Length: 218
Image (cartoon, rainbow, N blue to C red; front, side):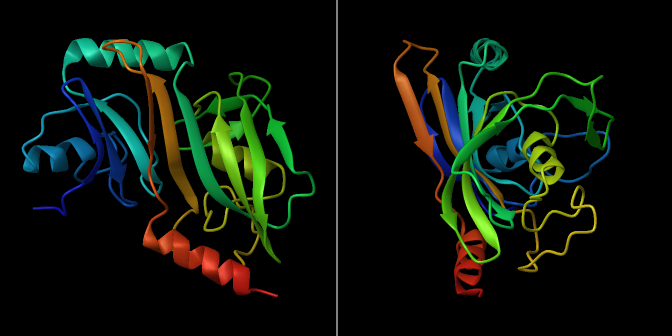
């Protein structure tokens, strides 16, 4: 049996879990292994995935407890009324304090690239802390294209620390074991009564250690 998942929020309609890195959000044709839903079943909780996080990304993941709720939440995602805030550690020092990346993204299966033939994409960001060779940022993911955050930051010359897929030969200054990206907070109107729900997933130990190494660099 897998390590139980931390429940950040649980009610009769939905739940938010803290997904650890390395665990699949949902089953996909190109990846094998247990999923968040599988682990929750081990904990005696039946749930339906509403969205997904990349395998190596940690943080807050929303699930529904029955099909009608999943349909309502999926509609909320389509309408972009669910706000998804991420924490990331990017290579280099971003010059501006905030900004947005809006290049269209073309999904090519297991890979994505910036392309005029792709779908509209928008990644808003603001700097939290600048270190000597990296920058902590908060990211407001407006659209949810495949690998969007990772691709946008790499395209602008600041691949995330630990990025291997889109880094284009840039050396990782911290030797991270996985991409430094974390689903920090999710905000939505609860499908039951429209009340505001905000759930935050604290940074896991491996990313806190990475920040400590970044702060110590000169």
